Amino acid sequence: MSNQSTGSTPEQSDHISTWSLIKPYWVSEQRRMAWCLLVAIILMDLLMVGIDARLNIWNRDFYNALEGRDVHAFPRLMLMFAALAFGYVIIAVYNRNLRQMLGFRWRQWLTAHYLHEWLDDHTFYRIGRDRLADNPDQRIAADLEAFANTTLSLTLDLLSTMVTLIWFSIVLWTTAGALTFLLRGTPVDIPGYMFWAALAYAITGSLVTNKVGHPLVSINYQLQRVEADFRFGLIRIRENAEAIAFQDGMGAEEANANTLFERIRNNWWRFMKYTRRYSFVVNVYGQVADIFPLVVASPRFFTGAISFGTLMQIADAFGSVSESLSWFINSYDTLARWRATVNRLREFRRVMGRPHIKEALAPATEHGGINLHYVDENRLAVQNLTLALPDGEILANVRDIVILPGSRWLVRGPSGSGKTTLLRAIAGLWPFGTGSIDAPIDARLMFVPQQAYLPNDTLKAALTYPAPANTFSDGDCREALDACRLERYLDRLHESCPWSQNLSPGEQQRIAAARLLLHQPDYVFLDEATSALDAANEAYLYRLLCERLPNAAIVSVAHREALLSIDQETLDIASPLGRAVA
Image (cartoon, rainbow, N blue to C red; front, side, top):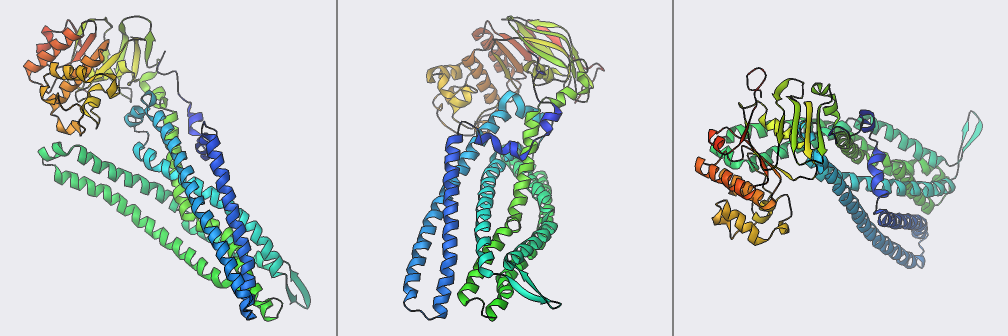
């Protein structure tokens, strides 16, 4: 099985539509609950529109009662208003609650699937290695939340707006009547003139708003990016606090953080500039909308064609129609942020769908690249292997080797010659170059880097990683710690803390060795995994691993000659030009 055999083509993965981001959840295994919640929310929205429609009629009756000083009708109308308002409040509260529930369920489903796709098949590694997308953590944590909730809100609000528009357009058309005037002595009738006035008003406002606010889409995209870059920089300072403190690097880090924040500042000034223009248009539009329907409808009121209550009903209906037609204007800022979020997710979805694209196009893969095959043989073979950089420059030529169970290998070479890259190729993480690697299909391979990864969890979870903590008993874990000379931590197995900061580099490397004793892999690859230890402890750990893993093949990348007495085979790697390559 080749590591190049899967992956989308550029044409397939480049075409990521907004609908392709929305659709999966609604046809997933959770679709029944999702559609039930959606239908319930829509019914509640329709009920609220119905109450608004009834309040519009109440509005006419109330103002007519005031105009006619109808004392008897007043209490009845107030009781009716209380009932309608109470019903509206109850429905609105539960409507919002169901919207939040559905939005979170959608986000939860998206997060689980994006996390799986990001972490599956080393996709997260390829994206970082090839710099295909910035801040994937923000896209999963923040963009998915914004996408689910904003998409749901915009869609439901648009649906409610359309129903409101249809109903109140009918009210406005029938209640306001026709406008009649003389044009050059000829009477002209404009039926439903208030509706046409509302339509013209909203279209004008929408065109102006789009013209003024269009740049906000790209500005919001950049704003999300620079904010994420700044947060990531601060996280890096926290994670490397001791190293920065030792090197007295506070000034450099402060300068770097200020540089990152300067990008936020520059983008924020652009955001403020266009937001100011957008806010000006929206506020002018809103203020004029309050008086515009009264001005347009007043001629018929002054002629006695309509009552004061009808005038207020027309004004209320005009406001609902105008508000519905102005959905684009009122939602423009949200739409701009939503569009920026969609663009970031489309880009992220695209690079996750094409993790092998750059590998397929790398100059070094003209002859098929490095092919990793899984074979039904108990051996690991490297044949005709040439390691290259992503730009095609040859890094190293590796002689053919066969690594058998129980064998011991030492990989040597100057820094930068490709020793670690060889291990990456064996792990399937480095496709740049030519040749083939045959790995046993059922064997357990473990790679131990110079600095082992320790999750922020209990010490037992860090020790058993990547297996769950309950995979091994406390007794087995204590025995492994004791064997690796970590006696002081025997009683701290269930203590949680940032172990990567609390343990010294040498202790972290001994934790990695204890991890090997627990997992008992068939092939062990040590990439300078004892470099932080003194010679005596290093030799002790190597002897311990050889004794406890007698049937495992152990391949060590190291510079110290002391390991020659332990390792049986030696593989020398050097740059073709006899120089180290960065």
